[in-house]
Length: 117
Image 1 (cartoon, rainbow, N blue to C red):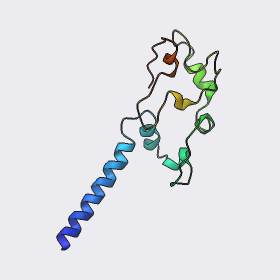
Image 2 (spheres, rainbow, N blue to C red):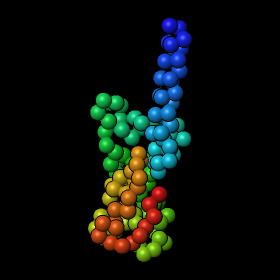
Image 3 (cartoon, rainbow, N blue to C red):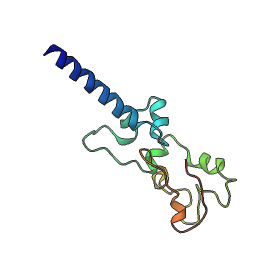
Image 4 (spheres, rainbow, N blue to C red):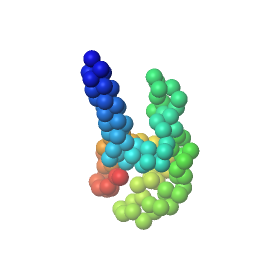
């Protein structure tokens, strides 16, 4: 019985570690945020049962929109972080999914072909 409990405890530990690693593995934001020591609560708030969905206000608490617009000003054919439709106020999560594959939101109507990290 002791061996079973030990094996079960080891398996649970491995599963929990794998889940934690996969949540921060290979994603645009989640891996970078986790590597910097940020927790889920940083972006999703303290209520684990009902985590908040981050919006541009959440992102701009740490990421300066004006700096990002300046950094990407030479991207062709147009700066992806400022547009005639949204100026610099498009929610970051329209392109950058922290826990999934990113998407080029502009390409729904345009053929800019931006590579979204």
